Length: 140
Image 1 (spheres, rainbow, N blue to C red):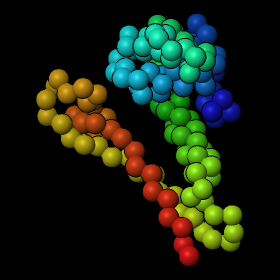
Image 2: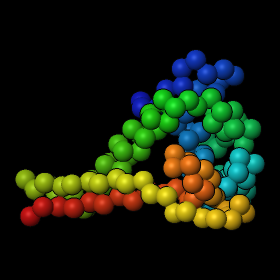
Image 3: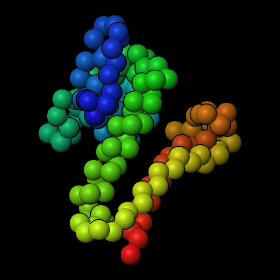
């Protein structure tokens, strides 16, 4: 990820160690964080042993505020590369001359209550839960 995401020109060191900061955010979300302050969950219990290089919530907030639309596109590129590498390590991708199709789709599940956890307005201008679906198909 470090080679894909570059926050050049970001102030207060927001652009340094982008990979550790992004992984801290993802790890926090997996552990149940849904706002920046909740990212402190990674510092409790045994999680610091699992997630090395955890950053403070205030540092992660500064990191996120430094993002522009172009940085979001850089994260998309890093996500695509990660997904392809992950597929190669799962045994789903053949070693022979077979062709593999990888389809990555972004989906929005509309929700209607403002208190729905994780719901936000995205590119569709509709309140919803935004997620991705990855499909891998091998041709035989």
